[in-house]
Length: 179
Image 1 (cartoon, rainbow, N blue to C red):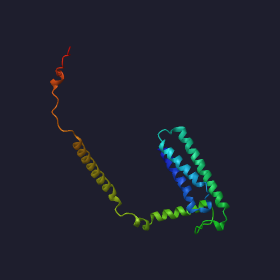
Image 2 (cartoon, one colour):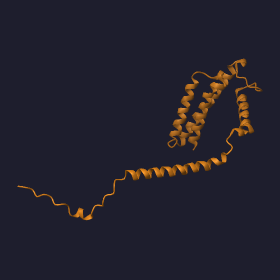
Image 3 (cartoon, rainbow, N blue to C red):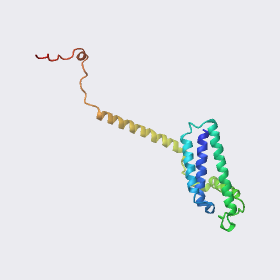
């Protein structure tokens, strides 16, 4: 279970590195795309091999992932501090470190997700989705069963009389050898 969680965290962090090109372009460097791809591939491999990763190996993978995440955060913080203030992405009401910008934007996103505006854009009958899904699966099951039954009946050879059990006991006479 922890291995899957590690894979999800690494994939999300790699996606965040990729998305930084769009939201904080002054912090993005050309090799960040390659490193985000490497991170997604690593997350895939961790997910794919989750059954084999146990104990000390999992602990080592978690430690390395957190160290790389901390290194990435320090790198982005350094890039933020080295960027002149007039070239930084303007975020209203926030003047300060990258951490404060991230906290502000996260709070705004959370407020939006809790707002009535966001809820009004969601489908209104979310509670009916499980019933509709089970009905669709039942219909699919019936369709597949009837299709397989029709295929089996159409490919069945014509009925032939069952072999007589005495035929096996008394084989047909063979021709005697001629001299």
